[in-house]
Length: 86
Image (cartoon, rainbow, N blue to C red; front, side, top):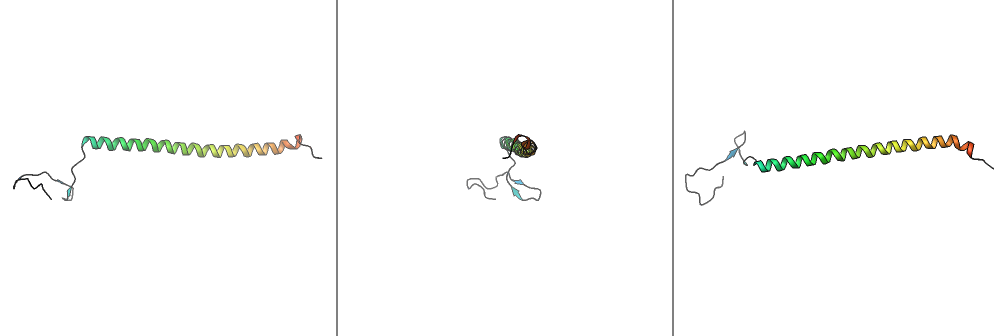
């Protein structure tokens, strides 16, 4: 592990190791944890809203298509009585 050149010989330095004993980065600070949690929460909220908007849009299209088909069928039955042919 590289150390600062001004560090006297025999000085103690703090290192972090993972479960396998390999050197790793130090744990996250409280600010880093808070920032990542807020970012994850924001992404989750936006994701839920995007999914809800997509579901609403899909349901709206399906219902609208169904209503138009029902209106067309009703008009087909009614048009014969209202329309005269020459």
